[in-house]
Each structure stands twice: as structure tokens, then as C-alpha cells.
Amino acid sequence: MARARLAELHGVATSYEPSPGRRVRVSEDTIVEVLAALGVDASTPRSVRAALDDHALAERGRLLPATV
Image (cartoon, rainbow, N blue to C red):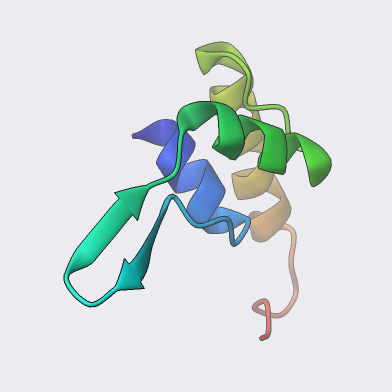
């Protein structure tokens, strides 16, 4: 669950829908690799917690909300 939250925070999908009504979950290994490509270590539960803490700290330091 924490890894899924971390993926969401970085815009990484954990599933996709190739056709209506058919949802495919992305493998945990793929999510870890994509996050690593983004510079986020999600390889262990400890690293996921640390990355979530880092993200929360960075958000608290923002003067303005993130934009799209």
C-alpha cells in the first residue's frame, strides 16, 4: 500500500485498463524500476517509508502548491 502511495505521488500508474472493464495491475518490480528511473528508491519497505517522509518534508517546504 505504501509503495502504491509513493507511486501515485510521483505520477506512476500501478494499473492500466487496456480495454473497457479489464484492469491490469503493474508488477511491483516494474513500479520499483520506474520509481528508480525517477530517482526514488522503493526497493525495500524502509526505503519506501524514507521516500514518503522525504516527499512530505518537501511538500511542507513549498511556498505554493504543485501545479499541473
